[in-house]
Image (cartoon, rainbow over the protein chains, first blue to last red):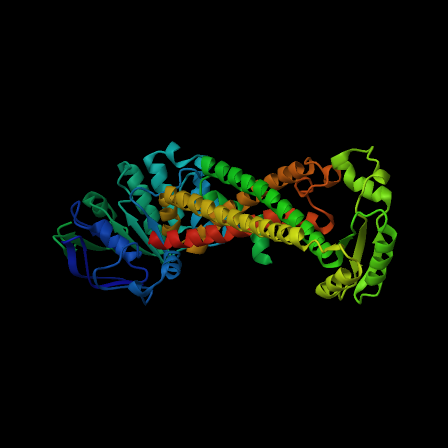
Length: 224
Length: 297
């Protein structure tokens, strides 16, 4: 689905990582860990073509991401649901409108009504549907971001620190939702520095745990 | 046609994706209105001068005046000779000697209504109207010199040609002003759209992250600015037409400056102004949006 082949990326003259390879197979579940500043968010952004690799190849659904024009990138993003660390909502829209945004921009707004109600119920945000993002708590925003990421039924879900702003109970609830989606066949990639959270989920899902540190991506697991 | 309908009807959800920009919106409507108001006047002046130029050109081609010497003893003979020469000239359609009343009316603005025309040596005037083919002016002058000594043929060229040329230039300037107004609307809309796009960079980023194509993002801005320009232009056009209507009519003074307005089918022209404003706004916003979105990549 998504493949990074000997990919390098850097800001200015500073290389963040180089010769890094990663394959997200259909239905797989990945945790990406590593210290702050290691490049987790950058790696995720490469996976949904928000950044272009300075070297190597990123393939999205079999296509070279570097060769995609802006419309093709947009089409690829409709197959990838992203939960951003800072949620990335439009503050002038209410929660329901924000969640429905991926359908709206795909000219599929008519499908929103049914899906939206179901999703709001699924993430427990029915009472907050009419509220604007600044009026919501961190946990509510994270759940809403997850709902927005899945409303178009994407094949891949990428989540960047989805539990960063929520308490333990809420983080467990969010992860349960992601595990549930994986069981429905979705490919999941979660970036987190919260090792305790990963440990708590190990028994629920067969996840591959990757560690990004000092520009190297390694398989982790046993030490967790 | 479907695209135009979609543009007018729009997609309320898509429109809401981009937040409203209060001041820019009001300024766009205001400027479009002012431009349409000015365009109505430029149009009215251009059309009025066009009409006047056509009238003058028509008269220039067909009308002349023969002035006979003011000699009371020879007056009748000169008149007969002149009429004979004129009536036998190929291309002359009609010859008519002005009556005393008509001549008095012509002199009245300068000498007042009580002019004793009979006691003054006033030259006799003869109106000469040519047919469509016209006559040989030099040949006629030569015959008049030989047979009607002292007669002067004035074909009005000397004073009408510059007036017609001036009227034609005013008309061209009127159209140039309308073109400049269109260009100003385009420039203003481009700046407003670019400012709006720049102010909404974060919104555009979010829309892109959830899979919006450039055409979707551009559509929200294009529809918004097109409708604003059209709305402002409709209001400006209506105010402009009312302004033209309250100008004095040409029958009141008889000057071109007093005859500015629309006649008959010309009334359709002001309706075109909002339509053209909308088209200009559509093209300008679309170009600005796609250019800016490309730069934001």
